[in-house]
Length: 224
Ligand code: VGL
Ligand code: ZN
Image (cartoon, rainbow, N blue to C red; front, side):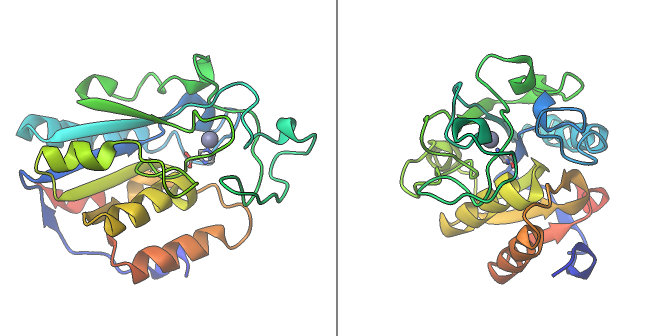
């Protein structure tokens, strides 16, 4: 499925049981960053606009941060291979990445224009040296939780709005796990961008999210 083929929801009103999750809006995922995502900078201002709406209503906002140790096994450099080379092992893959979002580095910091001050909580993921974590709920070993599900459920949240980077990796896997964990999931489609590698990754992500009844909407149609 292509982006243009997604069915969009007409409009959604923000409710008290909603949380906004802003995924990986970090320097390394900006177009000039180590793992640059095309158009990643274009979504900063509209994400801030949506965050402002959630904040004004008193709704919970969570930000996530990809947060890898030096020499993380998802890095091509750890295998003597090239970034974006295919590689599959438990908790890693389907491709290898440039070194990115190294703990404490500039690249791992939130892009400074992103309104991080509104975040109630920050979830860091990918810090176990041998396991990646595309989902902000459960790491790629499919068993280690980040604690986000418990956090949201303790606060009575039932629906999550997922925006940020990247649509075909962290947003996708967070949406999938979110549904499996019992949340309703909404993706404001204009507030995310895809990596697009390997070919077919985005298409598969859109297929699976559609199948799992993730809802897609234009951010302008989210009302308070
Ligand atoms: C991501 C690849 C590697 C993401 C993180 O945030 O989507 N993608 N690390
Ligand atoms: Zn990463």
